Amino acid sequence: MSQQILKLVEASSLKEEKEVPQFDIGDTVDVHTRILEGDKERIQIFSGVVIARSGTGCTEMFTVRRIVNNEGVERKFPIHSPRIAKVEVKRSAIVRRAKLYYLRDRSGKSVRLKERRREEVAK
Amino acid sequence: MAVGILGRKVGMTQVFDEAGTCVPVTVVQAGPCHVLQVRTTERDGYEAVQLGFADKPRRLARRSEQGHVTSKLVTKRAKARAAAGIAAVAKAECEPQRFVREIRGAAGELAVGGTVTVEALASLPNVDVTATSKGCGFSGAMKRHNFKGQRATHGVKKCHRHMGGTGCSAFPSRVFKGSRMPGQYGNARCTVRNQKLVRIDAENNLLLIRGAVPGPNGAYVVIKQTNTL
Image (cartoon, rainbow over all chains, first blue to last red; front, top):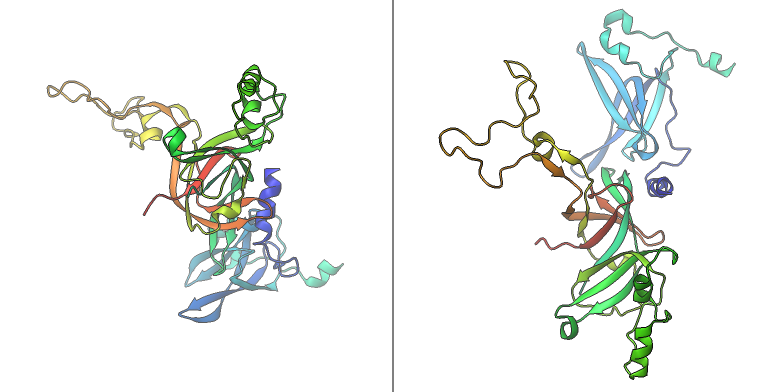
């Protein structure tokens, strides 16, 4: 009963099914976030590899990792946040686990993931 | 006027506000509450409204609890009073209630038999929430009073989570009264004050209160207008 009530409360904060960004673990994505500067709104893009997804309902988050100046940078985004305008999938990869934390220990060439072609998915 | 309501803690979650900021909230199912009694200065010496929340099956309710809410219960005393020509006291005429509490303040428009819903809190920005906190049993000084404990190494033997000395040395060579020590922690009446009311859902009788509220999920809580300035 209490879980149903919580779902009811969360429902108002969830995005509509069409608007929920679709991507997989290992995808290279561009995350478009709305940023308020003064009273002007602009879009900032954070691009990197999705290495994890966690939580359920409106607490669902995803982690994007990228390398900036030889330094790993990770950002966590709430999937249902209205500030996430769009998540664009640039490239998909073949991965065999749900959390790609092993990428944190790698550098250089070994960070690369094998690309998964969209045609293969269609088959 | 007494502004308050009784409810039950459902659990915590988070919602996004208009600005898109994530707000942690506690969901409380509150009301509709029956007004069981109204206390007045003339009769009781103070002003308050007694509310009841959540119906209790009649088979579980004592006769006194049933008689508190209904005038239909046949009792010797009621008969005797009727025979003596004393007017019957107004009752709420509802099911016996599980959770009964008084909210201090003048009754205003509320009368016995009336109901209080979450809409009564609509004009309040902030509330105080009172409940019984989670019981933690006999807890050590680290958990109970946030003491630091002792070192992990450097000769500390089997007392890493103990408190330090309490009585000092030659002076005062005794323990001061009221020193903080291990003991029963939790399971006590606890109030969080000045919590923001994020949203009121009148349709489903829900209140969304920013931040945490004492007690486990399912605990009964009293929500009142805040008394902080």
